[in-house]
Image 1 (tube, one colour):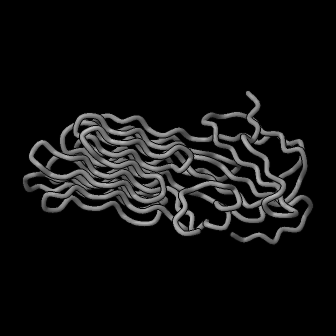
Image 2 (cartoon, one colour; image 1 turned 90 degrees about the vertical axis):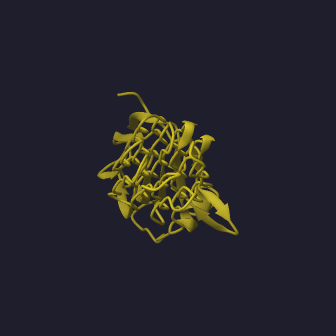
Length: 268
């Protein structure tokens, strides 16, 4: 298999630790240069937003993590960083990210009908369709069955996607801030006053009948619109639903924060 080395290696942000960050989409083998215990953070790619009238936002990529995992030196470890799903009718699911036994599930695509299931569920589209189910995060929001048919927002890792109501499509669910300390050390996620959010859902589209588009969930979710915005790269954010063209989902990432030797004291 092709070698896959970390995109960045940081030995200074936290004395006594090495922070390896994988951000390039794809699969390959990593050979750790030393052994130690590590905190592992795995984020999948976000789902693509729906393309077309009254389409839902994409769901954020799922997250898996583990603490104190033993990483042996010179052992080939298969690493997969998942890409974001393409926009479409419906939007495509994001791709899974994998490290050792941890598999983060790609976000569900935004629906032209029902939202797609995924790590976080995609938003529902068209006329009164449900959002997708999130297996590791929150569900997508439903679309409205009443004109002007606002669509649902994609689920985030911090909250359910918004439901289309009145003349307003649903916003993407906010990302999670649970991993703030690690994300600051690894320079990842989206900052808000010293708190880092990641894996926000995409906002629902505008509609030809007059419903307004919605913002993406804070933490990398793309905004809905006539032509929507994509989820932010390496946040696993869902793409926004687009009345004309949806936004692609944001790619995932993997962080390995290792303390060489057998001792491990980080729990962020």
